[in-house]
Length: 586
Image (cartoon, rainbow, N blue to C red; front, side, top):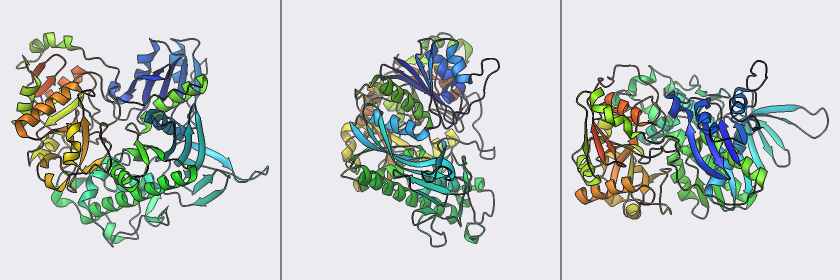
């Protein structure tokens, strides 16, 4: 059975599942080069040639435009032209179910409670009471709890809905409460927008939060678990805002973007508000996990939805619930629902109870085309290609050269994990500022690290983790390691770390091992292979172009043992140029 699942809307994506196995996953922006591209037509084309038996259309709505003559939606029409007998399943009205199915099937658990924390899922209507003529209310999914088991059992235990007039909560007994419409993720969106990042760029708020502190001038963002209506205003389905008219302390004196590139201009109000929203929201997500455990009896918990990518919150939750087995879905954002709906339909149709944990995120559709190197030196003056090995690359890093790594299939999700990575020396005290400048990022944003898995507990307070292969936690360094890798140590003493084994990524592991031999440090600085405002590179041609358009000189191709040295074709962006948005992909 060949199932193609798609997510329409921001983070458009396609996932191809054959007999229950995820063959590949790709976000449309990687192919179209348009950030957050929402219509995964190019991704779908990667599947139609191999055949599609069932097309599953996910997202947040089934209300797609109809095409002339046939009246089909565009996605059905595209696949039908290649596969006339394709079966179409539309699950756009069950967005949170897609999140839950993705995390549950990927986790490897036999049973689990799924906790979904989202900005706005599908708009759903429900009747208050069972009598005919009872009023009907509606709202967008915001938080959900499901009790999950094989083959395709997802019992809705509790849900919260949001809407601009008000919020509803629906329990299993159909009890409905009308209340404030500001939910966990909406609060984060509001603060992100207030800080000038855009509501979808919560990763930047997360990066600023550790610079802040508790501040009595800022009111509580939540009261009794509800968003404070006096300061937070939602705008469903997309975005929210901070109403600072009652709080002069929070009144913006200038465009917040003025301090994005100049730390001397950032205000305590900005830093402390970021700190507060991080603290309050992660505590509320913890309360949801407790609710999920109490209501289902499950000790296995899976987390998805956009908030699931908050690596600071994930570490807090890992430490708060040592008695629970928590799976933090690494493709927690909307794109990953394409995997969830595809696997859900497979298990529903076949009643397949086979457990298939997702053990690798190297799921891209592109196979590197190294033949383009044959004419590289003819096309690009001053470009050179030479043989190199991992020990020589490690020495370049120790000499504080920026070296990019391009190999194999791209990583699924927003984290670079060694196949589309920019590497640097983590011991450089100026490394964060240097690479932020090269990439065109804001001064306060931290960088990640990749390390040998066997050294994990020597360097970090692991909170019960034995590995971190998907870079889903910002973890405390051990006190004796503070100051050893300043380029990747955030202001709060944490690092978003990836552990690497030889089995997971042999070439990357070898570079890190050789770097340790030279420096004594089993960690390399790792950030995503892109510049500000761009998706991660997908193809070798895009990797070369990114280097040409930046101060990055070196491109390492470990599969063929080559190093490209590339000239600079374009001056880097200056601080006075208009800032472009960037996703939390580092």
